[in-house]
Image (cartoon, rainbow, N blue to C red; front, side, top):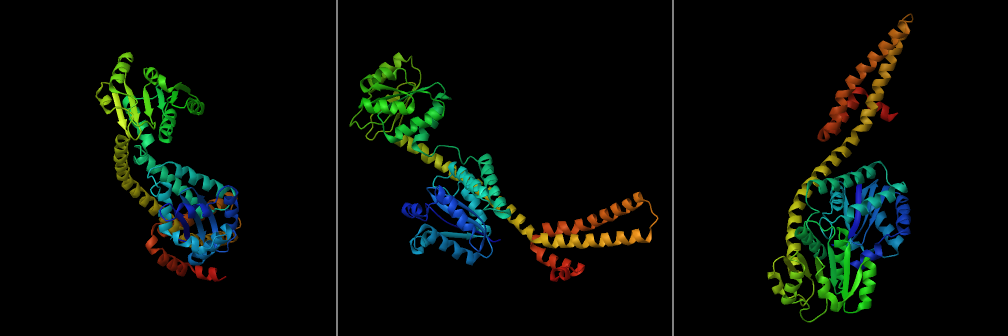
Length: 423
């Protein structure tokens, strides 16, 4: 199985090395063109993301193709091999198939279960297809990788449970309110993590967002980005009466929301539930607020505990995903092995067809007065007999990978197919 992968990722190479070897935009097109022109490469595809650069190839001979690809990388990117060779991994045969299926299924990602890699792989496949850089083997392999990834997402919970602080906040909010449509959010401060959490909330149905920042101009600019509304920082308590979710991320050295203030707010809210997320370090929301009925307060440590718990769940699901990958690798390997029997089966069928044609021809000559319907019936009978006799050897050759070489030898000997090969 001359399938080859040459690549590096976040585990084997620094960001500096990954940046030097990246194939972005026009470089991807040029790189694919150059790869396909290498003498030892039959088919090629190229995946380039912020975390990995991988070349997939169907090659004539593995060791010589590796040398060609390494030299191609060095020349194309203008980097000495010594600067990147130590960061590379090289997989061939079934090991390469397994690696690609694991990559597609996000089992090799920095965050196991992340969805982006499958989309990136599809884009890489589309690019290779549009340039006719792939063929019979890689097309089958890349399609297998995509269907395997879909199967992993359908049959496991590897993509469930938030594994980032910002998305953990969304997951908790969804549990508290059962749904986020129609809920309102206020950002108190403008930290990056708070902004990201707010964006996740909006993607999940939140539409009403307001920004309270000590610098009002900064609040106005951010509100424009969110299609929201800026409010004065001093009006925060008034606005909180109408806010379902508060994300607090300020640089204040002490609490900006106290227990007594929250008790008053809850009375005005008629005790409707409110979710407070304090991402600030040091904390900006009085922890005693959590004792108030229908107030759900989480700080960054609480969110991290949710993330850690979810990561453990994803790791459990990853084990199930690995089993699916192993199953699909076996299916692909059996398909690939079956290709070895194709030339023998084709040759055998050609031989059988020659015999059928000759014998039907002799029959026609020896019975010149038969009507056309009878001749056609004899021709159909001969064809049916040939197909039935061919069925057994064809099935056995395809289904018995371990003995295929021996069977091919026997069939060639029995039917004199070696003479045809020599011719």
